[in-house]
Length: 420
Image (cartoon, rainbow, N blue to C red; front, side, top):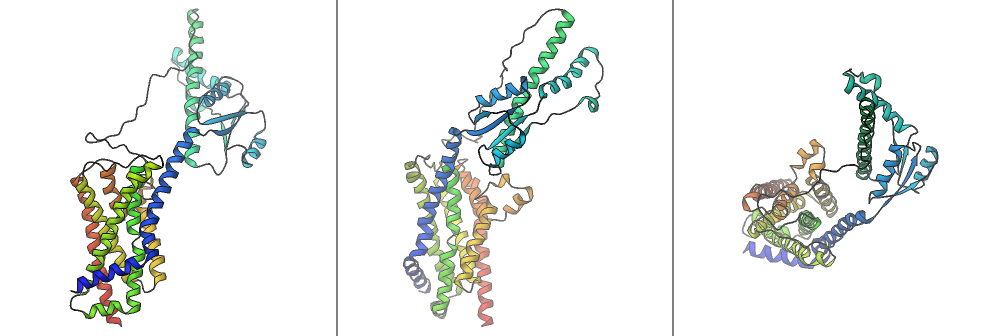
């Protein structure tokens, strides 16, 4: 009787809370659409967008000209070659006329030749080379706009290093041929073109054959589903505080049954809500995202595992909402602490930024976030086509988290009642 009355009350409170329903359903749907679109269009635009680069070639020899040709052949850059000072180049980049400026120092190619000659000579004479005496480096300066992301700057530097390595090899081959000509008297002609004998082919390592293709949809739907589920903390905690303020909570406690019965009704109602959120996010991935030109969500081949992960995640989110509602005394406390704590747990859990790209100590800390457990469980299904065995450990962790939050909530509520 008490459980039934509590469930009916929870449903009535929930359907009357229009702002809460918007937070629970419309905002997560809008969020997953916007973020997926931003990520996908950013990647696509980078493929077709060329970055303006200022190229200052003071070398006017093999390295300077070949490096320029290599950059021009790239699909990433628009090269503007000028003969200006480094000071003027810095001003142009600072004014955002260019995102990057590359300065090739005068005599760079000659310096490379001088450094290579002793090594080539040692091949024929057997003499040992004093590297401390012969090793000198030339510095190619790269001026960057501070707004250019670090990953893109690293991409440019990596491209330059690849080009210069090929050029150094060509210079070395030319010097080697020249020495052979002097020794044999036979003229040899070498090709100016670089020989590419290695091709890189990317494949995904699946344990079994699957139709799943990792893409922005497969990554974003599980990530933001977890985030949306845990944001149930705001309406759930708010409703618990409202009950205490209007006296309905204490009237329920006077009815036969325990406090766990009251928590049970909240768990049932909000578990249904989180599961509806889960289904809605899947439908967004299947029907709405493709309408915007994004890949359709592939649910994998294990619907049972998907349901288990959805229920386990919903229980964990509901338990956390009940805990916040029990701890908090005002709507302000529950709103601020609940939302901020969920954002922190999401950041730690890999929702905002991949865990594998975090520092080592942060990767260890991320293992305490329930959103990390849920995300990894969903990834097993959406990205690796895993089944029940692959998600069991994550589902168990989420269920234990739910039990712990309910237990702590019960203890805190008893303490609060004793202190009144």
